Amino acid sequence: MNIFYEGRFVRGEFDVKDGRFADVRVLGEEDPKDPDYVIPGYVEIHSHGRTGADFSFADDDTVRKLAESYAACGVTSVLATTMTNDPKIVEKSIEAAGRAADRGPENREARILGVHMEGPFLGKDKKGAHDENFLCDFDKIWLDKIIEKSNNNIKMISVDPNLSGSSEFIREYTKRGIVISIAHTSSDYDTAVKAVEAGADHVTHLFNAMNPLNHRAPGVIGAAFDKRLFSELICDGIHVNPTLIRMQFRLMPDRMIIISDSMQAAGLCDGTYSLGGIDVFVKNGKAVQADGTIAGSTTDISKEVENVISFGIAREEAILAATLNPARSVRAENRVGRIAKGCMADYLITDGDLNIKNVIINGRTI
Image (cartoon, rainbow, N blue to C red; front, side, top):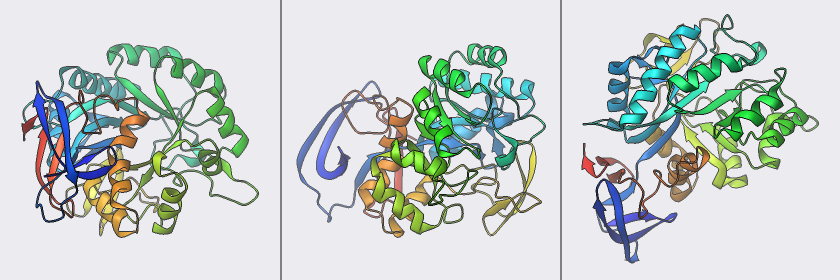
């Protein structure tokens, strides 16, 4: 069989023991005539929900349902991504996701890597689909309580560096091992660089909910290039023009991360749904609020990898952007995102066009 190993396809084989890759052996060059291709399971670090469920309103059963839905479309690891909402609702949702992260995947579930808090520490001027009634300045007392309740399973927090005290906040929580991502902001270049100097090394859905790249005002997009920040891209063909996706992959292929930013309509038909408690209207797969603001996506990583390749990106770069790059961005590359000795045996069996035949998690076919 052909396996995706160290960034390229080779003919090879591997052993699995106790849910992990025990050994990987390269036997030769890729054989296009072999019908079976093996790639790491997709790693989704920014998704709010799918198939009618939402991480922002999750109890234990909802998290299980979501984990099964992600696994069914090839996502073997996911950061449960919450939206800005009533603090008590957010707390309960994060607690449930934290419990799932601690217990690990069961039955037909994807692995919950932890929590990505997108909000509430965001600016109102680029709020997107976030409820401005709950947007707020940094509240360390509240955040520390949630971190404790999650059993330290908050892995990423998206913040607006324009908020007062952002450098101090970023410095403190990056030292505690949490990835800080620049998001939903009208930040200029200098402010974004200050955030990077404080410890931020990630950008939430690059190009979306931020100032556009300007030749005299490069903003967050320019800072992402200069400082080589991990940069999320929603590759549904709606949020970002394919030309810009090609540009970013050419500039920083090792920092590109394919995300879905999906909401509960993903995997379902057109209609009226909710994202973080706000009504969202889906028509022809495009999700918008009543005022026309784009509100998340209805796609999944597997479809986006297909899109990215169709946009002209090399197959290998697209796979890395959906596996190893996101794993590296949240410091999980020694657990997931690659076929390597010691990593969890989470992988997909596909055909040569990456159509999924089977999903394996912890060495078990689901």
